[in-house]
Length: 242
Image 1: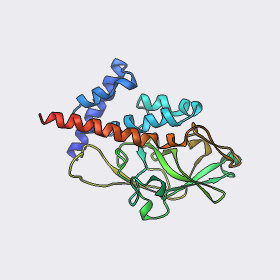
Image 2: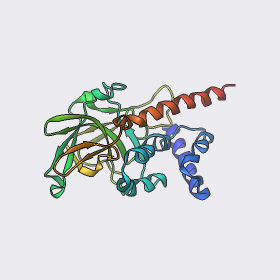
Image 3: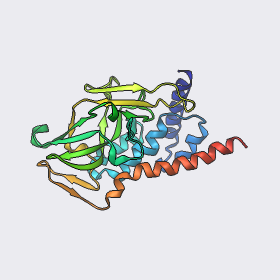
Image 4: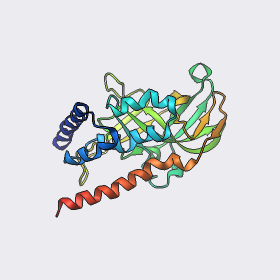
């Protein structure tokens, strides 16, 4: 729609200004407000990139973080499901460990087992983003280890085509916020490498041995931080009416 296309134009301008002026990641939020439009990079900057900064280990950050900060990949955050919002532990999307995948280094089989598990609302997922932080229940040897964050590619890096086993949808027109292309996602038995589980606070070996590192509450820190940003943003929007 026209609103989305205008948001994309402003997103392009935003990225150009960031690069031309070498604006540090932590200083970009003021520029985003000045753009005057809700575009998909907001989710990339508020949820996707901070997840890599706070939940990925050093090696994983070397793979993805610089690309994210330079907007060479675009991501969002896929946690909410059609029937599960704030009840994070109730999400139905599963990541089942298979030690035989990837030449016996191990991998995960990601699945949304039914309509209720459809990922719902992620900003930028419908058209813009090519990857996301995916929250899914880790299952190892039949044991449910609870929700964990994964780096999950959804579109081809070069062609932007949706990857096999993934269905991406646009949730359609909303009462507001239509510069943002909120989407939905269904996943059917898609395999990803073992190390795509973000491992700063957990570790899973190639044989499936699970261990915790530090405070497990940090796994849910991204959404907590986002709620704080929403409250702050409400103040900005109210100020526009004065």
